[in-house]
Image (cartoon, rainbow, N blue to C red; front, side):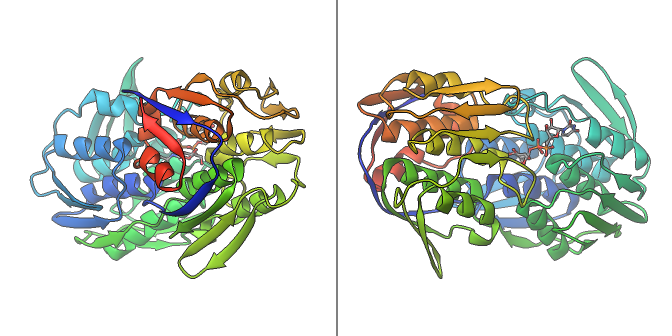
Length: 416
Ligand code: UD1
């Protein structure tokens, strides 16, 4: 039962409500460790990555309860102990606990974190900047130990933009002694959400959403509540589904202001979008694509997390095109699977060349990572015949009930 069977060829029609953001929930849950007492995080998606983060917090003595989309974290029972290595290994966001735990206890040993296999994904930027903040770090083959008597503010110049490093350093800095400046900070909306949550708890952070963050360390943070924004990548996934399968889909709660570049590309590739107060209405395949190149980049550019989804959109557009991936070096793992469904795609370095295809046919294909897995499901919706996408667990890392949601939109899909 780790697969999805899809009977392709049905247009989508209906409404889907966009779940809370995975990439915002994870660092915010890690941030609760900085706060004595109970925080209430609303709109937390019920997905396996969030479940693993909940387990990590529990293994540190926190009491974690879920009621629908509300996750309540009480840190009063916090005690230092070993984190379950299976959770650390499957999820890269476990690295977020480093900044938070150093602030809380001054010491952490952990295995190198995992996550999707989409590139080398080292954590050198995180560790280098933490050293500048007064942390001693000893690395071994499998992991590292970090220790400090007191985190100190510092001027941290990241040599290139990293979402995870920016988040980790924010978590380390909010309770540090003095002022921390992060230059070349990531500007993703999820960073903004983390800063908003911490500010609600009493942190002093200036420049959220810009490339220069200034954080004045405070003595303590206070319990607070926060509502996680909707997931722009999940919204982009259902947008792509509609563009590939055709039809009309209303994306309720889609975070439009975080999706500018994706919506811009979508319109150039043939979608029609109507903006309403509580979401967007997408009409797929309204006109011919007038876009033959997609280049990924840091926010506000086109997100790397949408790249494989738009590869499917492009491959079905009836025109040739190219995708340049500038963030992760190994993010074309979906290509052989798509070719088995009839796509004509070749990869040269960080560029995928997409040839004209006569359409996809059903096949048994293997998800190899989260977004690529979702992209295969989308491809199968538009394919002739039946497809099976295996390794559903990758997709479950980031999507609540993708099968149920697609069925509600008229797709024929089931667990297999
Ligand atoms: C986060 C997102 C992920 C998204 C990515 C880029 C979460 C949980 N994940 O991942 O969905 O695809 O941002 O938008 O929020 N790098 C280094 N050294 C480091 C850190 C990063 O070389 O210490 C490199 C990475 O290998 C990668 C690039 O920098 O090539 C960007 O990575 P980063 O922004 O850190 O991505 P994540 O935080 O892992």
